[in-house]
Amino acid sequence: MRSRRPVIGVGRVLLWSGGSLWIGRQAGVAQAHSHHAIQITLALTGTVRLCYDGQAWRDYTGAVVMPHHRHRFDGCGSVTAMIFVEPETGPGRMLKARFGSEPVSPLPEVAATPMAEPLRQSFEEGADDATLVAQARRSLALLTGSGPLAGSIDPRIERV
Image (tube, rainbow, N blue to C red; front, side, top):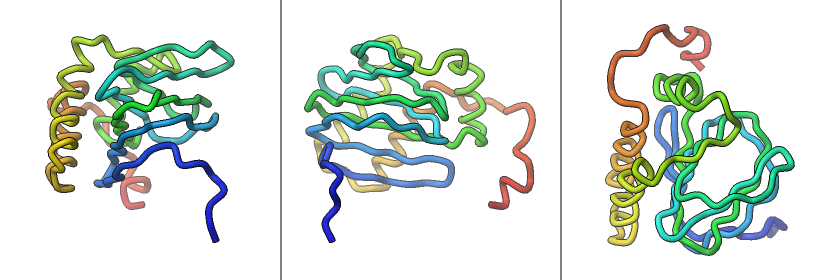
């Protein structure tokens, strides 16, 4: 049976414990939705658009979408990457502490470009899955750092 959902891009989805990378070309419009993961959206070429909570569409080179906030995405036909991070992980807690005051926070170009450029180059060169995952995790570390984290994940959640 064929899906009735429209195709909104062509690319790859790569997973690791606590996160994932969705990277592709010809990114289109995703209907309004929300999810538990924190979403880091990067325009690898051009810009993307996001809107949320009845706000108007806004252009971004990079943005962080907090969990459980209904939003829409338009890749404007460009090459895009989305890094999804589980909020209970160390990087997730750091992202919530840094960006959690707004449903969607723009990433200044000075932050977005060093995250996006290596991903774009790796994707365009046809890098293997392990290389793309490693690059996505390096890009994430540019936002979260790699220092020790205060507090811990509830052991019940960590077991799941």
